[in-house]
Length: 183
Image 1 (cartoon, one colour):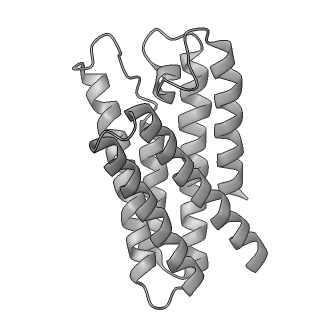
Image 2: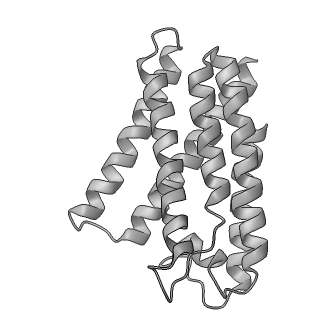
C-alpha cells in the first residue's frame, strides 16, 4: 500500500501544486521547479512531493525487499526513497551552480542510481520470481532508452524527465499491485 500511496500522493501534489503555480508548465518544466528557490508553494511541494513521497518509497522498498526475501534489494530501494527525500533540497534556477542546486542534482542521481541497482539485483537474483525479474529488466531498459533518446536529440530533457518519472512510478505502482495480490 505504501508504494501505491507514494504514486497517488506524487501525482496529486503535482496536479494541485502545478496548477497553483502560474509559471509552471506541465509540458516543459521539471517538477523540481515546483520546489525551487523562490517558487510559490515550494515548501508544500518539497514536503509533499519529495519528502513524504520519499518516506513512503523507503517503506515500500523495505517491505518489497522483505517480500522478495532479499535485504539488499530492500535496502537499495529504501535508499532510493531516502534519495528522493533529499531531492527536496531546492534547486536554484537562477544559479544552477549554487550549493543547493548541486546537492539537489546529486540527490536525484544517487536516488536513481540506487533504484537502478535495486532493479539490477532483482533481475539477476535467480531466487526472485521470473515476472519480477522481467519487470525489473523492462523498467531498466526503458530508463536507458529514455536517456539515449535525450542524448541523441530525439526529445528534450523535460520529456526525458517525464519518461523517467513515468517508468519509476509506473514500476512502483505495478509492483505494489503485484505485492498486494500475492501477499
